[in-house]
Amino acid sequence: MLTLLSAPLLSGTLAAATNTLAWSPKTAMVMIISNILAIAIAKQTVQIQNAGAMPPSPNLFGGFSIGTILGATSLGHIVGVGAILGLSYIGSL
Image (tube, rainbow, N blue to C red; front, top):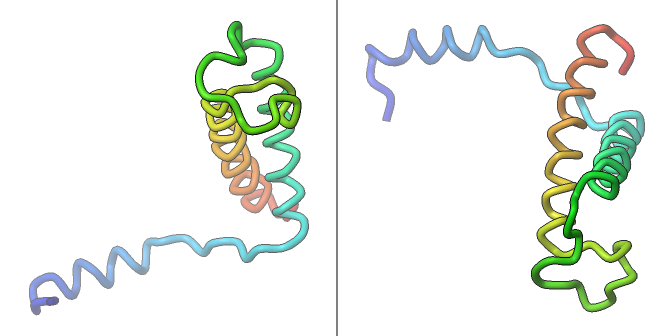
């Protein structure tokens, strides 16, 4: 419940928020490329790639355990969000 005191604070906060980029195939490609890059980095740097629970088909993800897959794709999403925000800021997306 908003009170009269918090309404100006909320409207000022909303006015300072930036516009977000709408989804498009370009943003999807940036995210896909970022995830592929992160998986390639994980393939080269993770020392024990198959430690922990394995997916039903071990060859499905190149011998990665579920933890390695989640870690690599999490890094890929962080890199992807940064790339999408950066590219949209300079006007490339």
